[in-house]
Image (cartoon, rainbow, N blue to C red; front, side, top):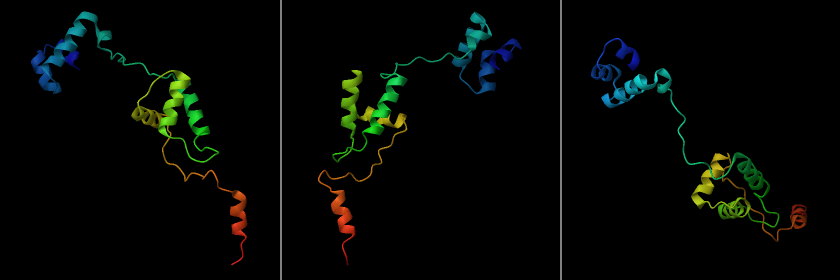
Length: 133
């Protein structure tokens, strides 16, 4: 719209008032248009810091977390366990808060069930259930 208004003879100040944007922003748009045409106004993908883990590594991490979420000897997987796994497997160091952020990104939640005690006996539980009143 700014370019259209500019081509129709409006000043940059008038354009900024009509579009409710700063004059500086209008100046940037018009300068880009004059130097490179309409193509120069296209939004470019902003580059940021690359991810520490690739998508395939994140998938491997998710498989590890899901398969090790409940330990057979009792207890459960905690953030520090995942932090160590990432460091040992992928040679990448994560702060603990970023491990939790990564778990959220992988659609994993920290809702856990009660862990099983290592000395718990399924047989003893079954026998207790059969105990007469």
